[in-house]
Length: 140
Image 1 (cartoon, one colour):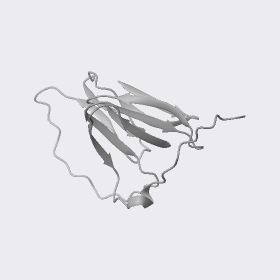
Image 2 (cartoon, rainbow, N blue to C red):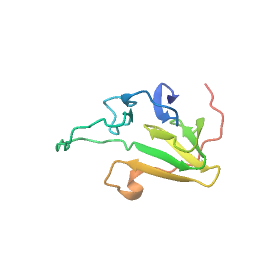
Image 3 (cartoon, rainbow, N blue to C red):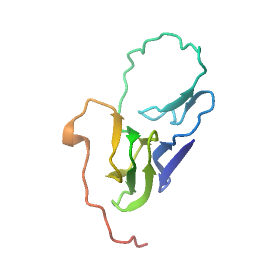
C-alpha cells in the first residue's frame, strides 16, 4: 500500500498507491512528522465519535506537503543536498504522496489535476529555495 523514497538514509517521501486498504486506521507517518497522513477503511454504519481538536502549540521548522492526484500522471523528481537528482516516481489517479524532506520537482506527463495540502500560513517565496539541478556526476 505504501512506498518510501529514501535518499542518503533520509525519508524524502511516502507514497500511498491507489490500492485496496485493510479495515481500520493506518497512519503511514511517524508521530514526529509535522504533517500526519493516515489511510482509513470503515464499513457502512461505522461511527466516529464527534470531537474537536484542542489548541496545542506546535513548532514547525520544515514544510511537509501532501499531493493527491485527481487526474493524469505526475512525475516527481527527488534531489539530494547537492541538488543532484537521485530518484523519481510517477503518480497516477488517486495516488497520494507526502513530501517529507529534501528537494523535489514535478512534471505533468499528461493533463493533470491535483490537490496540495501543507502547513500554513504560507509565507510566499520565503517558504522555499529554488535551484537548478546539478547535472555533474558525484565523485568520492
